[in-house]
Image (cartoon, rainbow, N blue to C red; front, side, top):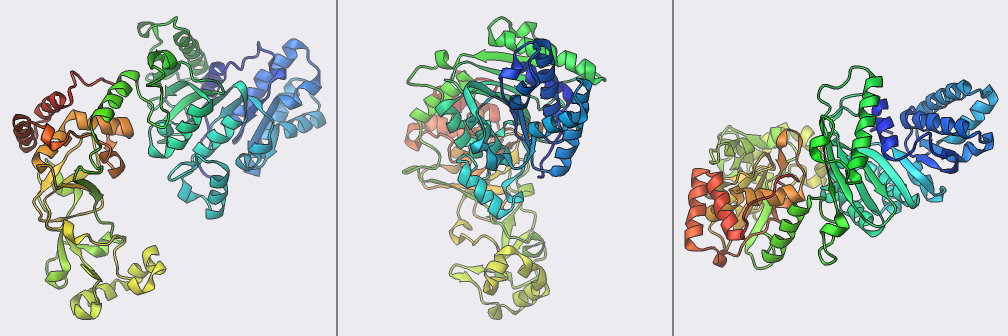
Length: 554
């Protein structure tokens, strides 16, 4: 299976320490389950601790087989891991045949997601599940996984299904310790998994390791160590670790991260304050049950936020309606997806009939806060009634025929061969001459830009129009840090401090009703928008929303 990324030995040892899986304990009485063994990073570490515990306690050999179980889908990797297990067992005095049999009982070749419902309940599920986007999975396999795991919805990555499968294999009070992307805590695709955690589990630790190096190779995966227990939700430790000045030797890294585990346990017990934490570690304890009342309890269908940010978000949600909701007169859309930009976008005004060229706004046209059209056109195959007849436009017909092979290879053309020259999206003709705000998809801050009805947006621009708002005043509100606060709560922050300003997040920004905005505030927002004065926009927005100060952090 694709998406296999090996975990560094020091990080594996850290996770086992955090999970309390130590050789000093009676590990032969527990079942440790590893769902995606790979070449054995976690499996070998589990086996070493299990064997040390078994030897220390003088337990019979028969107690070992039921204490460890791992799965690996790929037989080649599984074979390597079994050979490594055999060598480890030989070090403990096992004969070749006995070592092979025990290694085979510990590691099965198979699909954990398919076999998990029939497996015994575990005391610990630990590992690094594969990261695989849904479109990379065979359609039949994706459908099967989705039929088994309710959290595997929409754009959910495969690791989400592994998390759900692992959680349901836990005994009461048992723990799941995974290192995986933390996106499920914030993204829309993680909502079902957050709901599942709310129903029957306790999120105990999120240790963000974006700026550490937890894997054997460099990957962009937003990793975090996450501990989830099958218990009622209690306290949560939120932590970040940056491995600046990392030890050169893995043995030194293991020692350093063991100190990290001890520090995090002290934070969990309330015995360690931020000033006394090891270098590179930031951590704090959140008393989930105590901080929030029964009426304002943690809602895991929402992103996981610091309590002060969650409290403010709740207050604003109760007081103000979403930007796009019934009665607001405000709508969010997205620009046009062509399916073949190199054919459908041109800067040549003589390429085809002038009626078939539509000024197109690109993301680069909005830089600096003003719309500066770059002279690009959409080669437009649409009329208000539908696709035009090519026979009515000889130059357009000749142009599309020159590119027919590429146009017909597209999925949208194969699905509807008679419409082979269409763009993926259909034109919204009412949008062309409408005054509207453009919002670039990826940026560090919200950057609304006014279009006076001169262009049509390309797909990497989102568009907002309103029957009720003065668009420049609305642009001033969107320019403010208050609007960014909503997007930061609902969405995720990417590397480099960038946000995705997608329609799903823009629609959920809370707005005052236009009648609630005083003429003074309205004019101030217009001024802030025209001057691109984010500080002024934020000060006015805070007055409108009744916010003394925006809480920092996530």
